[in-house]
Structure formats: structure tokens, C-alpha cells
Image (spheres, rainbow, N blue to C red):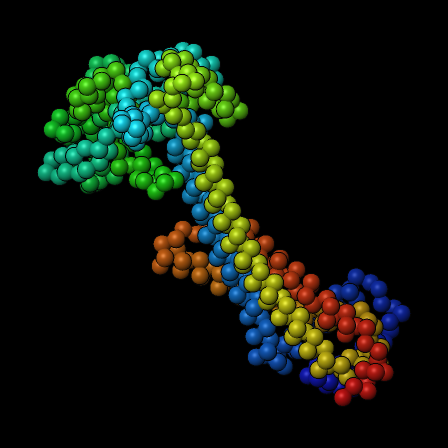
Length: 436
């Protein structure tokens, strides 16, 4: 004969043959029985169970979305950092002083091709050196025009930035030595001037100077600062200085980009370049430097660390919401123990042991969090897709994040369900039977 107590069926032979229990099959049967009782208990109080799971659902969904946003931000920043090259030092010209007023950086042409050659010859930790000049210009191609940046470079700059040509050819040292009027075009400029057509072979006008497009660069995307790296045209530096901008200082350069041989010798390379330029520019105790050096790798590392910190903060907020959901489950389970005290007493009276009661209530708590976790994972995936589509924020959902969220939800169930389950298991059977 079976009796229904508190909505659960209590088998009358629950305590029979305890002496023969102990095999693996019996443990599986006990687990299945606990699951069946837990499911029945949840079905009896559907609304309360749903509201209890709501905290876990929101917490897991928040974890999925926050981790997806943080992971995408870190991946995007890593790609942007890689697009700029590695182990890079940038030397910029200094500023002028007139009447006690200091002008902005780059207002004095203090860097020269001789400095470039000296760095290349006398700094053993340096792998590549590339001078450059950067200006904005109006570019005309066919019946279209576009305002963009032109960079006067040498072939070493593209090697430092690991930037390849997808159509046509690259620049050579003979192009620089011969002051040839040709260029490499970025993807954005090519789209603005020629649409889907390959620009290689076309002649464009840069500040009214005809220049032949000999190569189309691969797409680089945004820089860490948000600038479009593909909105650029590369021209031999000698051509830019002598024929396009007509500089009054033909031996000067706008900046010098230096690549160290490895990350380990980056600081040493910076010291070598600084000491060499101090010597060449006669910088002493009473004279300020007419140049300044920026370690691009260090600046990018700070940006990456900031992004990782933000991702950690977002994840922490999401985990806190999940813990709050776990506290809600503990409260509901304590209420459930109070409501079913008499049922617990009857079960113990007919042979149930403490571990059976503990298993039942712990199973209910874990089942609540797992069901909430599954719904939360689905909701998190949907919300992450919505954030990416409607808010235009990149998101990256990883299987590891989903697995961790699911395991974390199970851990929350065990952690916050253990106290109510232990309280139920330690009830005195006689006092429990007297409970009204």
C-alpha cells in the first residue's frame, strides 16, 4: 500500500532490506528515486519553483552575456594589437619653443634620414628601422574623390606591421631610391574610389600629382584607438617629400618606427635608441630633447589590461547576481523543509535514513539550479545575439563559458542547498511527527 504525503508518494517498503543494500545498482536506484521525488515536489509548487529558478536564470544569462562581451572585446583588442606589429618603438620629433610657449609635438623637423641610418647601424637590439611621413590629402580617382591619409614609407614599415599585398605588388627599395610616383592603396580608399573594381593599374591624383596604383593592401580594420587603418595610401617616402608635399627639409622625416629583435630586448632597444639620438642631437643637462620615444607595445599592453579588468568586473557583477539567486533557493528550500516536516517524520518512521532525506532535498536544490541553468544558458545566448545585432556590440560565446556556467549553477545548488538538506536530515523523527 502506498501513502501520499505532501504531494509525494512514500513507498511502504522504502526501508525494507536495508541490510542488503550497498551495491552500485542500489545507489543508482536511490538516485533515480530522489530525482523522481524531487520532480514531483517541484510540480506540486510550479509557480514557486519557477520564481525560485528565476534568480538562477537571470544570473546564468548575465554570466553568459557578460563573458561573451568581455571575450569579444579582448579578442578584438588582441587582433588590433597584432595589426600594428610587435615589439615596436616609435620615435617622434619634438616641439618648438617661442617666447616661452611650447608648440605641439612634431612642430620641429628634428629627425632625419641620417638618424635612421645610424639606428640601423649602431643599435644591436634593433631588427628593422623605417622612416615615415604622414599627411592628409585629397585623392582623385576617375570621377570620384576622397580625403584620406597618405604615408610616405620605405618597404621596412610594411614588414614591421606585417602588412601584405593582396593584389599587385609591394614597394621596393628601388622605388624609394628612384622617387617613383606609385602607391599601395588601402581597402577603404579603394572602395571609395573604385567600388568593387581592382584599383591596381589605375592612375590617381594625389594633391594633383599623378600616381599609379601598383598594389592593394589586405584589410586591417580598426586600430586600438578606433581609427580606420585601411583609409590610407602608401607612397615611397622620397616621392612624398620631394614631389607631393614639397618639404623645405628634404632630409627630415616625420617619425621613425623601430622594431626590436624580440620582446625580451625591447627595453634594451629603447635605451640604445635614446642614447644614440641623445648623442647625435647633443642633448645635455641644459638642453631638452628635441624628440620623444613612445613604446607602442607598453601602451597597447595597458589598453589590453584595461579591457581585461573591465571583463573581470562584468563577470563579477554577473556572478554576484547568480549568488543572489542561490540565496533565494536556500530560502525557498528552508520554507519547504518547514512545510514538509511531518512528511520527513513519517519517512524516517518507516525506515528512511538521514542520508535519504539529505539526498532528497539536496537533489531538489540541484535540480532547481540545473533547470534554471539550462534556461539561463538559452536566454544568455539569445540575449548575446540580440546585443550583437541591435546594439552593434561584438560578442563571442564560447563552449567553455557555457560549460562553466552550467557547472557553476550545479555548484550553487549544492552549496546553497546543503544547509536546508542537512537541517531536514537532522530532524528528530518524534518531534517531526508531532509537528503541525
